[in-house]
Image (tube, rainbow, N blue to C red):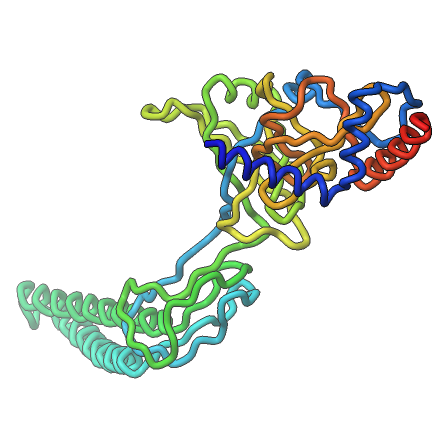
Length: 367
């Protein structure tokens, strides 16, 4: 245990040396002599529990597309061409993939031939019926014979209608060999290549519409009430970008197993929108943890696994080690090392310059 403490101490001292060995010495002198100095002019931030409690709380979420589709084969065949690849932007109705049409075209030709035969039979049956109807007026044929001819005509007409439907189905099956984009979007997945044989229902291409993105998070019931009263949200992405939600929808029901409520956040339209699947933090204006302190990211000095900030105390600048928690694009949680009301320098480089000037002033006073 002593060995671990020694290693930790050596690492911390090394970080202080990298920040400024002379500055650390000046801080020690300041604690001993406490010579009053004019407070330096620095851009500072005061760690305030009340401010952080009112700022809101974050939930982790995953970006997903409102409209996404996995296009599948509606007929079997061999892939003859794939005209797009992953990442391509496509327009609604654009041709994406083609299947061979040999079998489908053969079905169309057969159905068309059957329709021609059925139409000829229906035409002949109609003529025969008209002839028997004329004979029946003069009682040259019996009523039963006329009924029999009428039934044959009706059967021929039904066969003709069935042949027409069969031709339409065969034509539709041939149309299925052309896969088109259902809407404008981006190709997100490609599951086949030319030459592969596919069957009905097999996945071919995936796509999504980038202008409609959302995030869904699960929140406790008590927080859902507060969010419903103030339906606003701020989204922070991993690349540092921050956006305000276009709309916030709180589901009216809770999950019976987790007792949490789903909140759907619709992202604004962005010039370079995030891709579905990336993580983001969603902040709602609900009361936060009263024990949580946060400081600006710019105020933190990082040396390996150790972190520190410059703290203003009694007109002097001191370097203090801190333990960090979760962070977003602008702020980072401080789990240990700071107390409410501590004033930290936003710019460590400027604070180091002040610290060096204090050292010079302290040495002059000792002389």
